[in-house]
Length: 416
Image (cartoon, rainbow, N blue to C red; front, side, top):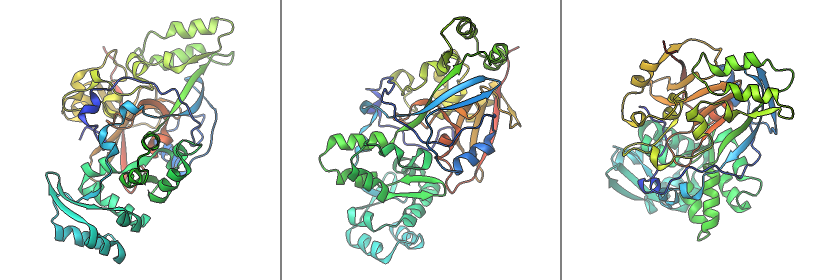
């Protein structure tokens, strides 16, 4: 599979999509970054250590001196497609029949009370996507956190399309996106009530029930959805003071000639009195510079696919995006031509890192290493997820569930 396990937006949403940068920046929580360039293993360790509040960090290395602070980007209302507002609670059991599904629910540990409510109130339907069970609030409220975790694991392994439509993972493993007055106290209480943990991932699968309980308050529903799909990003700047080695900085960001056109910016800033910082966006190659903090727009959508994490990362050094990267072609087809796999924990600017399921080898996610703890990424094909600079620990926090992954590093070949 080439695409991240996430819901693809309703096609009508694409018709009104525009690139937007969210101007409402809020304090984000995330693990403290190291001053040294850590590898993948240390990024996982940082994510598993849990969130700590941070206002501003500084990272020093061959890239120079980077100053950065966290922000939260929420999707604009135009990027909340219709299906997100669906208030129908249901489970999809794929190819199971009703008897098999009912037995499965017992095996997964649902209580006698919940099973009785399902027998009394549940509505079984056979759809083009497989067997479905519809239910109401009483069933939702009878579920325990362990019930939800067991169901989510089964859906991920056996009904993945339903899983990606229904389960949302909160970045950082906490409720910070809903706090500080973002939603009402009542909504926050509902989010806390229905959320559950899957190893180190904090998840929600009862979005429909929360929307029902919000009644006719459309404004609160929108605030709830925007918070649900908020993304942690970074504002990053290169500090141009007397301590930096300008020539070393230029070598690092040029990546053996793959990234050009920025050198005059650094030299000009270093030579100009009163300018001591350069926004990192000015140093990035054309494609990430164009898309940073933006959301998917109509010109980047194909009839079958929308930009996802792989589309974002594999084009990092391109001067313009290629529509062919939205074709349903094997992931390795794109990697084998322009990249070489390397074995290293010493990542450099522009290295592409892919995550694969350790058991079945399925592609899960990819991102681009930038510097230190900072990466460039997009969380799936969703219209609600922007392209961001972010901490590896924040990005990986939505993947550290009951699965096990392997990481492969690819470095773009230097043209002859």
